Length: 188
Ligand SMILES: Cc1cc2nc3c(=O)[nH]c(=O)nc-3n(C[C@H](O)[C@H](O)[C@H](O)COP(=O)(O)O)c2cc1C
View (cartoon, helix red, strand yellow):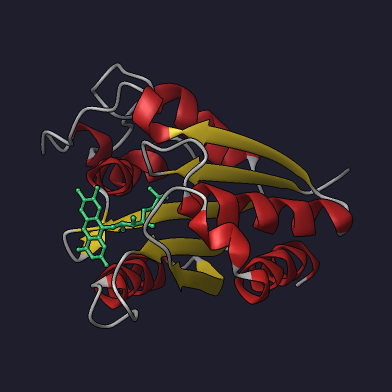
């Protein structure tokens, strides 16, 4: 069975820079034999976590919020690896991505140890000059701490400076990096 990679796109731009990097990751993963599926988070109804803790109760049946995250929980569990792609917005990940991250809190209500062994690649783009001044590293720290806490493995990060949608395409080296990360994501 081919490994499954689920891509979570956190930009409103379907053909934006972070989505293009994620696309290359998937292309790389496919050459390593994986199958890919993308979820465009901006087009989904994903409410903020309401802190009811229903998901943390013993014998919980999952997140109390009945929205599009319910379908995404299933897809997340079904995938061997995840790609999270986000633009930098106000010195961290986009709100769309953060809503998704907060709602991951409920994933353990759907399956035992849902994060352990899960392999993750992160793709981010920013308009600033470098990952520090742009705020990209703030998001990286969040992903690192969050996925470290739950026991998932971040296989790698790809990131680049690009402002206009599609500008990242001219950065051949970045696109190649993304492609290689995709191969690494599935081949260990
Ligand atoms: C609301 C908003 C906030 C932004 N904040 C930042 C920022 O804090 N730092 C930065 O370097 N770029 C910032 N940018 C620029 C985007 O990160 C940049 O254009 C990025 O490549 C967009 O990725 P996308 O094409 O995948 O949407 C911002 C853009 C928008 C629309």
